[in-house]
Length: 457
Ligand code: GLC
Image 1 (cartoon, rainbow, N blue to C red):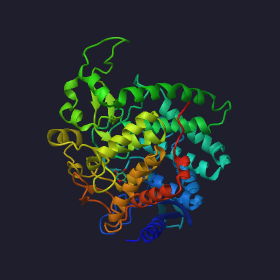
Image 2 (image 1 turned 30 degrees about the vertical axis):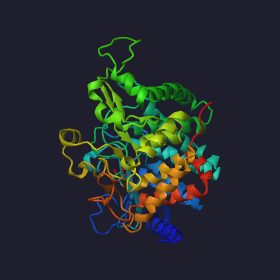
Image 3 (image 1 turned 180 degrees about the vertical axis):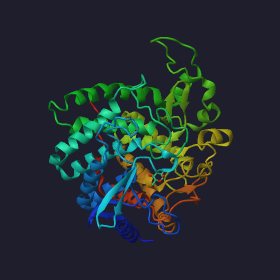
Image 4 (image 1 turned 135 degrees about the vertical axis):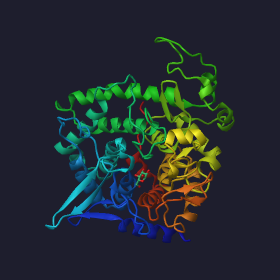
C-alpha cells in the first residue's frame, strides 16, 4: 500500500467521524462501526478526541478544536451540590453526544460516569482537556482564548478539584479504579501512574496559562507548592531500574518514622523478581504502575511512561532508559502493533481478583496486555523528543502494514499483538488520528512543541 493513499484515506475517515452541533463541528465519534451495537461508541470521548484534536490542529482545522474546548467547558460541573450526590465541581465528562429533540432543538448530553459501563469516574478528562487547550494555544497563539474569563475559571475549577483537601498524605492524586484510559477494573485504584502524569502535566499548563491576578492568586500558589513534591515523589519512588530493584530486594520492613528508607513498607516478596531481574535491560528503566502502602505495581503502563517523557516529568536519563526498555523489549512491548497498553498481562487468580473475572480483559486481551494502535502517536512523539528516530520509523512501518487491512481496529490481542482484538471496533477514530499525528510528527518534528514540555532548569 502506497503511504500517500493510506494517509489520504485516514484523513477522509477522520473527517467522516466528525460530530456536528447546530451545523458546527464539535468533536468526533469514538468509532464508526455499524456491525455491532454502538453502546457509547457513537459519543465523543474527551480522551479519544485528544489525538484527533492534534491532527485537526496540524491540518489547520482549528475551529473544531476551539468548539470542542468551548462546549466541553460548558459541560463542566460548576456549582457546588448541596446534597453532595452529584460529581464534584470542576469534573469534566467522559463523553458527550448531541441530542435532537422533537422541537428541532439540539443539546449536548454529557456522561460523567452516570451511564458508563461500571459507572467509572472519568478523572483523566479534565486533565486531558487542559493538555489540548495548551496544544491549541501553542498552535494558534490565541492567548486571548486561554485568558478569557470562562477558560480561566475552567482551569481554576480543575485545579481546585485536584488540589482540594483529601484523606491522603501523598502529593499524588488518590482515585478509584478505571478512572483513565483503562476504564474498567484492572487494579488501578489508588495512585495509578497515568493519572499522576496527567496531573503533573495539567499543573504545568496551569502554571503557564493562569493569569497572575488576585482571583488566581491562591491557586497559583497551590500549583507551585504541589509541583516539586510531586516531581520528586514520582522520579524517586515510582522509578524502577536495576539499581532500584537491587535496593528494594534488600529492603527491611516495619520501619517507623521520617528517616525510614522503605517508606511504603514494600516487601520484596511482592515484587516479581524472577521475571523482572531477567527482563529489565541493563541500561533500561521505567516508572512503575502504582504505589501505595506495601504496594508497588511493577507492570509497565505505556500512557503513563510516554506522557512522563513528553511532559519532562522524567529526567533526561530516565527518558532515555524508558526508550531503551522499549527498544530492547520490542517483542514484548510492541510486537506486531505499536504498542501494548500494559505489560505483562495479569493471569489466573490475579486476573479473577483484580478484574472481577472480566471476560473482555482476559490475559493478553483489550486492557490486559492488548496492543493499542492509538499509542503510536505517543510513542513516535517520545522517540522524536529523545532523538530516537529509528524507533519512530520502525513503529510506523509496522503499523502501516495492518491499519487499513484491519480497518483501523481499536485494539489487538495476543502476546505479540498479532490478532485483531476479540471485540475490537473497526474504524476506531483515535486509531486513525493516532496514525495521522505520528506520521505528521515524523515529517515535521516542530509540532512536538505543542504537546511537549521542556526540562526545568
Ligand atoms: C474503551 C477505552 C477507553 C476509550 C473508549 C472509547 O472504553 O478503554 O479508553 O475512551 O473505549 O474509545
